Image (cartoon, rainbow, N blue to C red):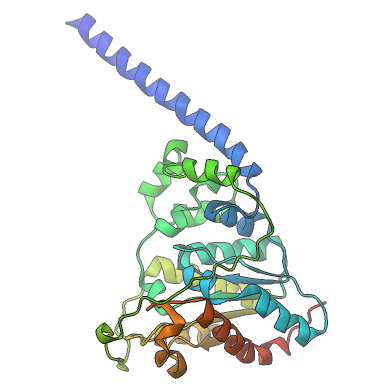
Length: 314
């Protein structure tokens, strides 16, 4: 009986030791591989780029609404004409990465260098989200990025423990990493066009102008407020923008209040009459197609011009 118990616990120890060795090996190898990722080869590479390498004078942050709504070259041409010189700009928005991921990126950017302007596209609905999946996307950087480390630790003790495992950190990401290394790596300005329209106007919910009753998520709001505080205290120009949805039935009242609290400009184009009457400019109810993005970028630039007048670009 004693021998059987010894064999059992020995087997358990051997299995745990093997798992620990594999876990260490995965972390050691893929932490090194992450440093080799090119800048423009998939979402994980783009996240690495904006967290650790990006150094353009103007940065656009956001989720898929950011990556699909801001035509980088068009906005760049307008800004260059405004200043009479070339101003580097990059659209660092990533599909499926919401307020927590973008707040983390905003903090990482201002910790590394001083951009002339950061444009952060955000609908209020993202501040109500309790999902941590967007910031967990940055888990590979847990050990070598103090800001990512803090964001993940603040999710709670369970996440703190799980992040010690490299297998957990790289779960579902290894294929993305390999894919990034195999992709062509041409220059990319970050804009991702969408084409066509799939909106069925007969099924659109009527506009609702009532006061917002949305409950915001404390973790997400705290992260966003940290961004507002840091940019305000360091005098780094930050503009919060909410780009159009098609006939939205919600609003951005609480987001507007947060921006006012920290005296950060807020350009609210979320519920815009022109776009509400032109469904052909949308791919779906939340995303503009390429035609809509070009029209929106021109409109946004006109709203942006008064703020550009206050910025010293040199």
